[in-house]
Amino acid sequence: MGGLGSDAAIEAADIVIMTDEPSKIVTAMKISKKTLKIAYENIIFAIAVKIIILALSAIGFATMWAAVFADVGVAVIAILNSFRALY
Image: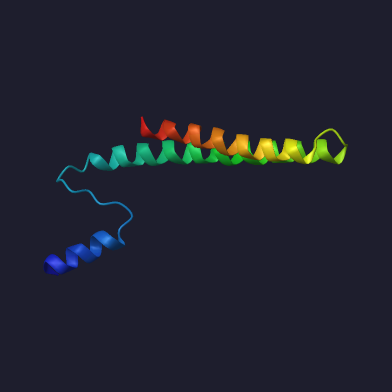
């Protein structure tokens, strides 16, 4: 397909290995598994905190401010947890 075809393939691909080393596939899979693990941790933590705050507010122990602080706190913790993917 020539130069134009390779550019189109790079744009359409989910992952592109730029060298002739097939061993890079193993590294890419390790990175993707670690990233998915961190994403699942963030999702589960966020949903768990929201359910706890919802339950506490239903019985009258949590106010709207507690819900706001919990939501912002979960967002900050999830962002900080996501930094682990950089290492």
